[in-house]
Image (cartoon, rainbow, N blue to C red; front, side):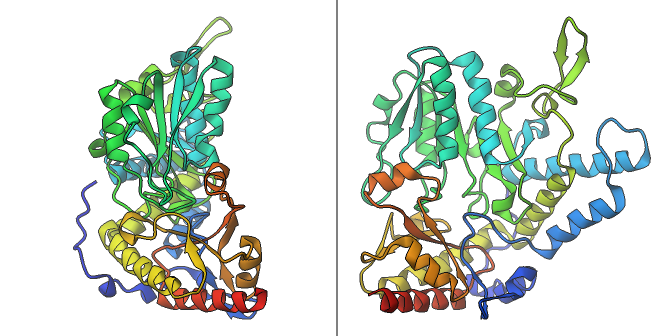
Length: 417
């Protein structure tokens, strides 16, 4: 995607105006103004997204593709326009390379199941990284158990950086690489281009989990040369229960369908079924039309702000947050503390305070953070910790949120010391 927005200083992006687009930020929690720092789990939704979905249900609610009546045609046009919006956003070569799913998890499960059915043999390996979300581990274990394939793991160092020095050696016997662009538990930006290039030198396809990337960074699937890429609507200001799988046309044509039902067929007899063309081959059943329209509105919102501008503003706030948190005694970051190689997430611990206890005291001050293993138990095992406190940023967060967070942490330390 070419970001045509003018690159401006972060201070010139009117965060207070942006905040007014998100009605939930006006509420209070336990008598305090809400500070929402759980954006890696799900982002809040702007009025533009809420209105787009509301308008769909109020004006054109109808099933798509098969109806000849006016409402069905209107719904189909809006639904397929959303596919064009997504394709443009990630710079897919073809609109039919965009598959609508229920989220990143389903997108990865789709690839694991379909790829595994035809491409995996006993003794093969799937390469993942040590910082994967469970959604990019368990589906590969499931298909691996079925096909006799095993997982290999790219290790991570003390700073949260993937160790790729031995990548060429690790790739021996590997049939597919599945790795995230940005770690949901540590926030580190992984060297995805180097990993893809190395895999392709060995003729190995790569799936990129971009669930924590598309809302923070420019993601161009052709520039990355990703074979598959997945992300979720609700992490980029859109509705829950909707997501995207991008796949190169050659791979999508090669793989078998994921589920059977309506829409994914051309002809059905009791003797044989022939399958539909892309992208519908992978979209069985009545789709989430409102979800597609909501995601398109969310992407439009992000494009209007400019992803480069968002990146600059978030980098500025991340730097401010890291500097402020370094002043808190006994606070330690889990993962790299450098804002340049981090997107969205700050994962931390304070002394011997359990993450849950810290999160509970912050919650009573109206500050929403995430605590625990963040669906990344192998990461926590790597650092021999039960979990972390995770504060994650979005475009509507400001310095007041960070000041409230640091003050809240200090208060928790006093109460729990």
